[in-house]
Length: 491
Image (cartoon, rainbow, N blue to C red; front, side, top):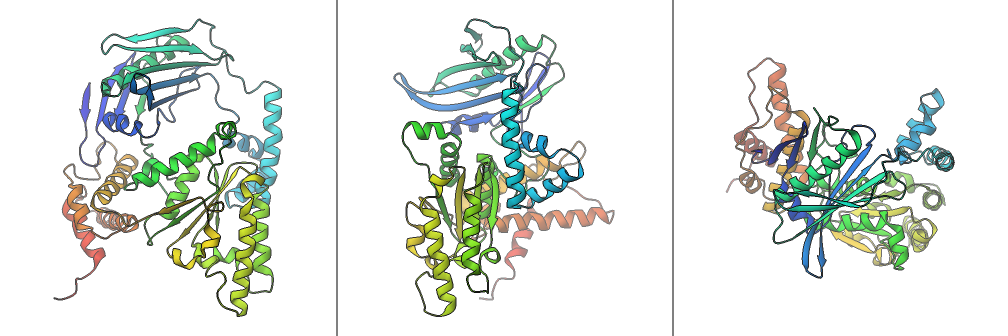
């Protein structure tokens, strides 16, 4: 097995199995993270027929014998045909009407979304009734065991009643678990795939086991995931728990539990509140609907009240998971109860309607979760954000030194994954992220993104003029940080 990478680059181990190349990224980090939250691996991989998808997860749990790491895999011959994306593609098609509707849905048009999702619900029901959601059955076998003799790992093998899913499970005591166990379980999973697809089916294929879903194109605000958020580990962990509660309503119902209906995020500008909202929506697999001030506040008498009522009326009709973001919440509903002029009365009316609509939103439509963000929490009346309306309140602070180093690491790693290619190196190998973090004291994630943008632009312009261009260096990043700070005042 080979190991490579340092600094912002991933530490990866590569091994061969049955002709396939497997890259295991930051195995020690995966195992450490699994103590807190389940870690999903093997995302977006291509598999030989009849296998359509493989889900692999590492999680920590407590047993009577003590804490353990649990490795699980589900090998399926079902291509998840009833996902939201597949159903929408089925409904929209490629004709002119479908393309027009697709553009309207992408733009957030609630009427077009209701039309498509309504037809999609009927299509999904027909799909199931016709049996088109069933994959190719695997050979019926008795439950058994697969074992790796090198590390002594044993995985139980069971078969789903539908005959389309093979499941593997192995446990290792937490004090004994090591990256070798993760590699061994990956090998056992591929062995199970071979038994379904044939002995030569993996030859020439490549698989990456990674905690982070590194993009092949630069991550944007729209595509960001919680894995790509740096420096906010506690907040990310809390949002993951919320996503789990949203994705498993059956467990909530079994225990009579009520997941959070609303989340308030507050903190200085540029700390990532809107990005976290997007990442939560992507973690849930939810549509994202952003509400801004002009969509609510209206200069005409009664217009603002009608607008807020319509937003919640639409929210009650959504038939797919949807996250509604009220960005800059204080500018929409501010100082409720203050003042007696016409403007204050209009704000009070909007605030009153907002309270009423939030009281039973989760009961009216459990598919919806509301997030509000503000830079000025003191401007929002406490009654608007009390528990029952906004059950979770998250402070998003400016990052400290360790958090800024993590933000640099994740941003640079994403750029490397998206842009580096054979013959082209984007960043030096010997970047000192801790030093960059110290130099950027007081900066936010948005500031760090701007530091990188400026260096990238300078390199691109130098390249465009035909100059000799090397990788981005520590000195260039430090200079960009200094330039963003501006001249220091004279002593």
